[in-house]
Length: 323
Image (cartoon, rainbow, N blue to C red; front, side, top):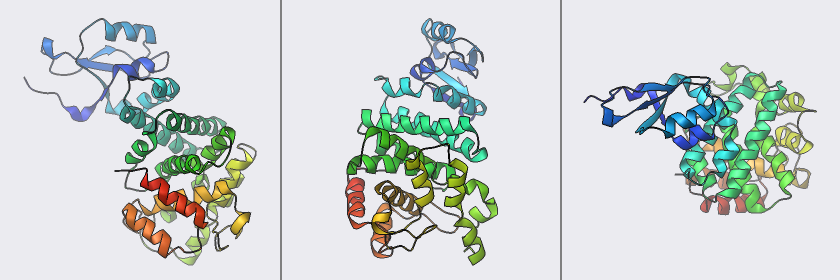
């Protein structure tokens, strides 16, 4: 028996499908090896109700369920609507939950960057950051598992997801404030670079060193993000968006804040932002391993971070393996 072309399909689980929204937004396929199936066949069409799907996949012996790769965006949209149920499902392993949440979060942020003025997309950023918090509180293994999925290549939207995950973990490790403040912090962290949506890709993705003029353009993104989100997110979130490039010694931008004039929330976001940027491949440089990144932050970025927060970050990472 010849196997089918796996390049065209992605395996999904019953739990994922059954936890999804009321109607399928994609075709669902299966094979049954006992019946000699060589290729996946459609068992539920797009638009099938959740009740009909449940009957179809519980009333027959199915070896595997699949979604076509071309329909993955629709699949993750389907999953985004039911992330709460997925996170709370004890039958789904942490790795599977992490994979779905990370992909959904990346899709949300890609949509935010494509249309940062959309109220719907901003609300989705709030929901997805709340799900990251919910997952982290429900499962101690969630943060390292989510971080293990991060790409070694830098993309603005995945970087924002990584900063939110690192930030939520460190925020909880330090114990900064109330649950409501954590929710606002998480949305600010996931939106921290939204101002880059107003900067040309040829500057953002330039492989060589930026000119002085280009760097001045890059430095406009915190203010751009603040202006895009003002009146749409909380003051805590706006603080992170505007101040995630400030430095403890006052050498940052856009306002050259320093010391206690930088909020604790922004100090946590600053650490998460720098560390993730150092440990991913950028157009102008290769990723550093975690030890090299921490050494560089300690020895070459003296004055950038509040010392106590930096020590807490080292302790947090030592308890959070990402490989």
